[in-house]
Image (cartoon, rainbow, N blue to C red):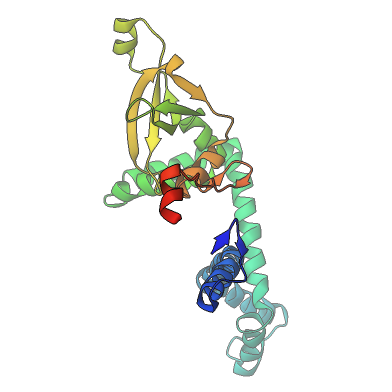
Length: 252
């Protein structure tokens, strides 16, 4: 048996193998998944965006070298370099630079005005207006810190769904006006997200004094919810299971 991660020498060989395997898997899996996500992102950009930029670089290179596009030998040479060779990284870097420039433009007053006109056109287009708002809401939630701050003001703990059970929630408002006026107390609206998908949850209105402000950021709270409570602020913490006298007698 094992105690706090220590493998006893009297453990059977199969038990040792299982313990070592799980320990190695716990170390390698996060790193492997992280690398895999970055590789997938790089491959996706290369196959869907960079390849078109690299083909354009082939045309630009041949143009400045005063080479005819019908020159198959020259075109294949530069295609082997920009599309299939080491030069393909150029398209990836150009795509990143273009995205950064686009973000800088959209951050300006002129860019925001132009983008509002484009969004207005999309919202008036059939079919697109039924999909675009929901996709935008999800992408803004994950990629925009301002959107997270506007949706979720702070992280709190509230007794839900009954007394004695504390749930993590996000304060999204100050409660319903009619309820506040009728009860004459300070209320807050709290979204209790579900685990492991925080896109859905329950919206409750409780008195402000019945909530506890948590020293957690929105990102930390989301990681806590998605991981099912395994990832807590400050790192991964696993609570040891305390043995009761009944369980100790059963083991003996």
